[in-house]
Image 1 (cartoon, rainbow, N blue to C red):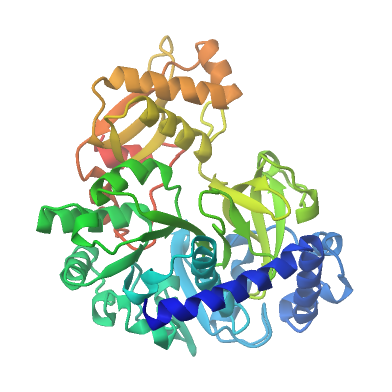
Image 2: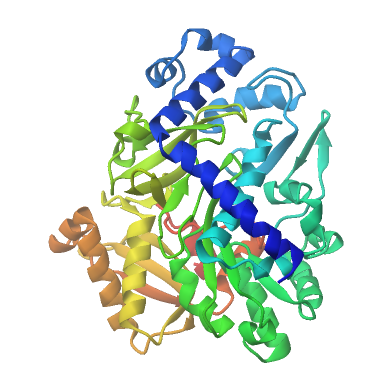
Amino acid sequence: MGLKATLSRPLAAYIVRQYARWQHDPIGTQQRVLRELLAQGTRTAFGQAHDLAGARTATDLAARVPVRDYEGLRAWFERMKTGEPNVLWPGRPLYLAKTSGTTSGAKYIPLTRDSIPNHLNGARDALLHYVQRTGKSQFLDGKLMFLSGSPELETLNGIHVGRLSGIVNHHVPAYLRRNQLPSYDTNCIEDWEQKLERIVDETLPAPMTLISGIPPWVQMYFDRVVARTGRPVGEVFPGFDLFVYGGVNFEPYRRKLFDTIGRPVDSLELFPASEGFLAFQDEPGNPGLLLLLDAGIFYEFVPAERFFEPNPPRLTLAEVELDRQYAVVLTSNAGLWGYSLGDTVRFVGRYPFRVVVTGRIKHFLSAFGEHVIGEEVEQSLREALAAHSEVEVTEFTVAPLVSADPATPSRHEWLIEFARPPRSLAAFAAVLDAGLRRRNSYYNDLRTGNILASLQLTGLPTGAFQQYMKQLGKLGGQNKVPRLSNDRTLAQGLTGT
């Protein structure tokens, strides 16, 4: 065992003990975090405009600061981008994490001197929890690959701007830099397909032990490795022990990805976002992600079914219930106040508080009043895959299909790119439809009343999703395909109709 693997073990034990301290009093920890945030907020233009000096509790915060997404806070972010100090947080941000996804252009999420450790420590502590829980640390002596965005940064009014993954790349500890792949120069390549070829060049001769990234883009890398070598990934990299992922539900990709690896490897799920590192899988085999409560973030949770009300309820950690869908709202030391993250979660544990990520609050299908969410379609697909062991799915999305004939019911269309198709598309579609009917009572009522017909399953050619994302300029990196749409834009882009 090498030096890094050996030294990681006492450090892992120490970190797990530190986490246990705030886990003993999660509610008190969150109350303390809120008080600290409010104290700093009084020193900002936002705090003065919203009377944060008079706020002490979550109730006070909710009375003064409404829930807003990026667009709702855009005016404040624009002031911050000019270099004006003390807008949302004391001083100026160290970085702006640039992300896409809004209708009116890119988002610029602040990373402050106080918030950047949250992103760095979250990933570190996830790996150390893995070491402590499993006793496995040898992976730290091999090569670690992180599929990420370019680390090249621009400067805007004296503030560094870049992708979050690229920003974090600049803060990889020196003792791990010699283990890190791909190289800096390769990471700077903007064209995803060229970058992927260079990554394969660099990693094939390397003793890879950990591979990390968003599952569909890791799958692309694995496919290139297999194409080059003619062997499974697990044979090409015999020391590959740990796959780290986040950003999307892994289940739709699991079968194909592990088939490409050719043998079991451990996996570790993270819940990172440009707005903060929120949670990680702290116990192997437990799908729940430990919510990080002492990391400069105060959490509120809005029942998903009430999110679009004018003044929805905002629940603290003490008020949440198990197995309900909540939209996540953040107040943090990045200068985010009552910020709607856009993600939905479901609590699967309390004391300690653990969540599973279930989708996006704006990604739902309710063209006919059914309000189907991402978790419901993903679980239905998982059930269909279990019933049809021959099937492997590369990617999928679901859209409404409105009938032009008033006498013919409308339906959902599932657009699936199969790596290995089912022997019977009709049988596979029937399992999908039955699964969704069990999980969503509104959909079942519409099906029972013949308002909606059974779903239409459309198989897409190999590479359809990659080609579509390439046309949008969103191939690779941290970009994700929406699971659900309320219109036909994505479906038409995939089918050309």
